[in-house]
Image (cartoon, rainbow, N blue to C red; front, side, top):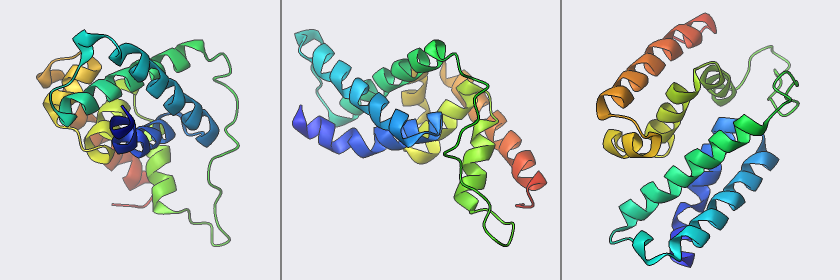
Length: 158
């Protein structure tokens, strides 16, 4: 268990940081994910033969924790004070621009993009995590890439 948590902790935290855009909430959600992972993994049915299957299982739990988080939120109109501000020259850091662009994507596209580009999952693994078909994930990734090109083009990054 410790090995699985150690191998995946930083990636899960990064996943939540991109999804919820609030470091404190991301840390809480990461803890909840590993709490559930440990609780569910005590069942002999959930034993893993390979680290990849364990990693996919951890991210499936993280995806469900994230859905629960957004379903419970009532403060969707609240302004996020943790967003990076523009520097003195009026330009923002590229990573902040990308985070903002990702936030504009529909949830399923954003999740697929974060899992694929930031967490290194294969399309088939993302399909299992999102409870979708491989074709649906490919479509989500293409739509996310196309939307990001447009959004980043409007920001002056082409």
